[in-house]
Image (cartoon, rainbow, N blue to C red):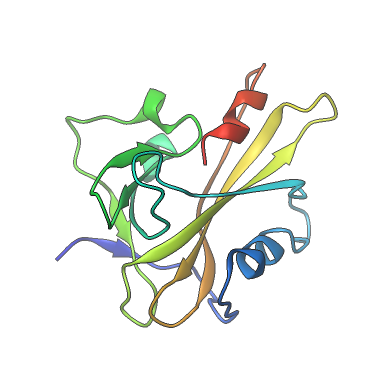
Length: 149
């Protein structure tokens, strides 16, 4: 069993990538707007179901494809991931599900660089939608992160 964290206030449900994208683009009072959303798709096999590990202190997330077991980092997580440190938590839905479809929401600066990254997940067991991790991008250029969902 993994250490797990669930997002607070998970009450929205969805069945598709479009539902998750719409959820990520809902305005958050006082937060940054999400102008771009990219679906998480395994580069090895095209799979769309994952388990997701987070290193909260480092603001880093890694997804592992449930079809082929290949792991990929989300956004700039590879630069901050510490293989010598234990994962802080594996994402889990309040229903107990640990298998997700994923998407990354990006808040962009006026010049197109990424300002903030939001890791959104849809539970494959119950359809619950949540933002499980987010972090600021404080460097540029950073538009290349749009290709690292």
